[in-house]
Image (tube, rainbow, N blue to C red):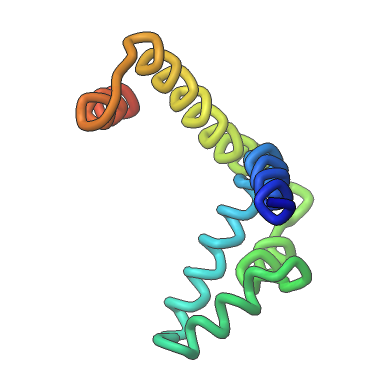
Length: 120
């Protein structure tokens, strides 16, 4: 019983904190996938690399190169614009979820609604 309560508490803490880190972690995952693909890694070799790459202290090669190539004369507008895109998608997801909940949609009906809502 105690382990069940501990598991429930851990789950709640994870669910509450996950959205705060999802954007940064997703970007790191994309970078790691890109590096693994460029390196032609497959199977166990890829798994080992991904495990190492996703750790907090690992520095992505592309991120380091991007930081080195940035010159003082360049504008930072592109990164700011790309940072805005996930927020808009997240807002859209919240809105679509609220609409589906208000309409009491479930199952396949909800799935179809969410798909069409997020596209348009």
